[in-house]
Length: 510
Image (cartoon, rainbow, N blue to C red; front, side, top):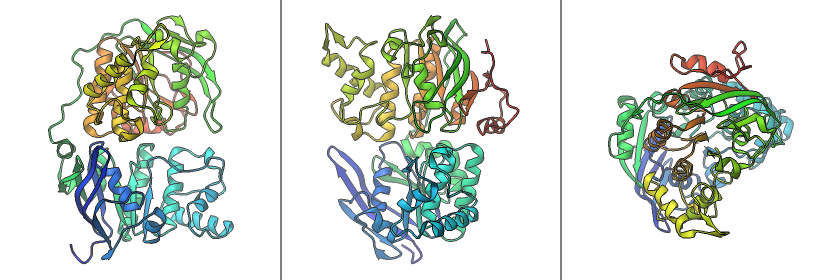
């Protein structure tokens, strides 16, 4: 260790029942350094940053902050020592203002008028302008992230931990965020940056520590490595690129949506307005958009969680708009929501029980009114094996899995039901490069077998890689689907940001 290191982690270990999350982990972070923490899902990244932030106590090892012993028993102790964290899942109250949310996250908040003035000054100084009086429920996902970051900056952190910070941002917002992080680093703030987007790591970070199965396996300068090399360090082997074994011919229309306008069931949701599109057999339609523009509502309207007039949604030419999820599943449509905790899965139920919840119709898991638990458990085992889900077995609770491993299980649960129509929101959200490639390949394989697929995603690279046609959802309206080939990233970014002049669909493209 050099005398100038801000944080030193020495031999840290943490064991949960049946899982060794961290083993002999050591790393150092220098002042003003942007340090990447890389690894597959379940590699131990989340456990390590929770230890640093005081959410988890390690079983062994020690930490030093500015050369002094550091063992926070709670996040408030970490914040008092200058360690702040912006989580992947925002912890904001939508009914409250920006200033009120910031105050709730401070140990000793100043009077509201003074705090509002500080929010304005700090947010402007770091290129993240915020109106402290605006209600959080009216903010975009990018603006909500600004609230979380500014709340941290008001505490003058020495170390800022960021977990998947760009997962809900447009390309333009990513540029703004990176400029802010570089400014912070130039002023001496250290940043521990977690992301599965390896090109971002290469563009932003000074150094990277790679974890694999709880242990440090490499340290490197990511600017001197390719994304493929970084991915290989993470998984221990070269990744196979996704590919279509056979270019699927467009077949008959299997999903048709016309004049779909429905209110949002959420207090601060986005109503869908005159949505029109079709999806044919063997086709993947990519739907881009910044979070909060109607993605959840679109999935729910297609899956049957939101019902409408029968002809608004047609599955294989049959009216289905007034049918619920189970009847649409019986017709061949499966869906995987974005929120894996509480919407796509029941966290306290086992993987077997979660496999049964959506698989009972198409996998025949009920016989004469009785659950076929042996068949349900075998279905769960099949998903675990085929999708490389890192878990002791099918009887483990869903919440015990890392986010990425649970995502692999939930996607596999839907794809393994021989569907004719697949609707997925954020298929690779929060999963590592190897898992993301596997999920994309599985989607491509299902399309090649004849399924029509709708992929809703904020990952533009993902949509450009796998989709045949491309549309953008903005403020509840869908642009006319266009052939993906030839679209530029800049053009897509403008469409996602709601640039005027982009044509909104009035007719479904055949």
